[in-house]
Amino acid sequence: MIEFKNVSKHFGRIQVLHDIDLRIASGEVVVIIGPSGSGKSTLLRCINKLEEITAGELIVDGLNVNDPKVDERLIRQEAGMVFQQFHLFPQLTALENVAFGPIRVRGASKAEAHALARELLAKVGLAERADHYPAELSGGQQQRVAIARALAVKPKLMLFDEPTSALDPELRHEVLTVMKALAEEGMTMVIVTHEVDFARKVASRLIFIDQGRIAEDGDPRALIAHPPSPRLREFLQHVS
Amino acid sequence: MQFQWSAIWAALPELLDGAKLTLWISILGLMGGAVIGVVAGFARAYGGFLSSRVALVFIELFRGTPIMVQVMFIYFALPLMIPVRIDPFGAAVATIMLNSGAYIGEITRGAVLSINKGFREAGLALGLSRRDTLKYVIAPLAFRRMLPALGNQWIVSIKDTSLFIVIGVAELTRQGQEIIAGNFRAMEIWTAVAVIYLVITLVLSYALRVLEARMKIL
Image 1: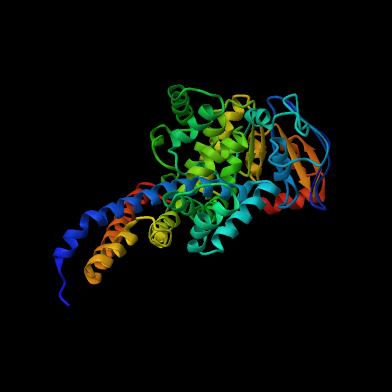
Image 2: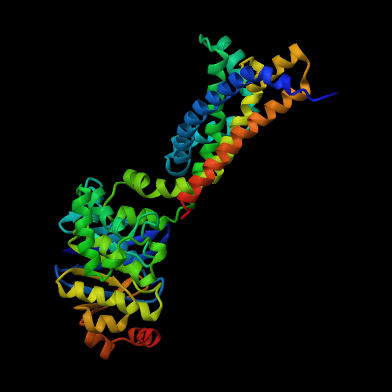
């Protein structure tokens, strides 16, 4: 589904990703952890070309991401993204936010899109909030609407960029519950997060990134219970 | 000197004709100015090297010279340089278009750049083209932020039409001046002219306030 071959990424003269080799198969739930500035968000944003890689090759759903002939819209339609700060469209209601993608991207009729949006809002537990504007929703509710908005385009995989980092502890739970349900349905997910507990319970694979390199890659339970490197051990102590 | 209401009533039909022309110049000029300004503003914010430079030169040129000089240039100088015949009304409308376009360009640029880049990324990440992201995501948010400054510019431009007295277009101020040349009732006529301008701008202010209340700044 996603294949990084020797991928590097520079911002100007600073190299933030070094020779990343990574294959993610369909149905995997991959959690990426790492210190701030380690490049984990950048890695995620390369997958849907919000950042462009500067060396190597990146294939997403059979499409070569750095090939200028490939329309990046096709990649983005297959890779839904959820942001740390939600970024719901503030002038639209929850329902209209979720219906936005189907209408503007998939060419659905308003009636079809609204029916789908109601279904997805019910799925994330917000059916009765459909006509509220983002400003009238809690952070946790906004993030759940944002997940529904991304799902509405019917992507094959979902990218989460620190989806709970802007939320109070008691609101994180509701977002993580929705993500867990999604994982159980078999959605391919790549999640950048500090939620180690979530990684242990839900992820099929844990990747630890340090200074732009993949430092560890393996079974989440094993890596968290017995961190093989002092760097990971130290990191886990700080976040839990 | 006594204030003679009768002088105003007598002059009112001509003054209202002038007011009508003032409104036409303003409406046509500002509609064109809005189009020019939005294009210039987007070119400055998102355009490539060439389009953003062209927009910058246009903005600096029309923001940096007096509107009175602009209208006299268009009306008197331009026909000497290129073979065009331009009537006073056309020159007036063109001047408002270009002048307000320059200011609206900067208003647009400021509003567009003030939109959190996260909204743009959210649109792109859904699979929208850059153009559709501008149209459906950035523009609706930017328009709300533009409204107060846009209202300000509209009022300024309406008042600026009074300067077109210099090219003899029969707008409100010119009408007032011509009436006074005949009846010498400066006090009454200038009062009436001022009140008519005030009514126009107050109605616009009120309409903008209603619009702003409906379109909250987000």
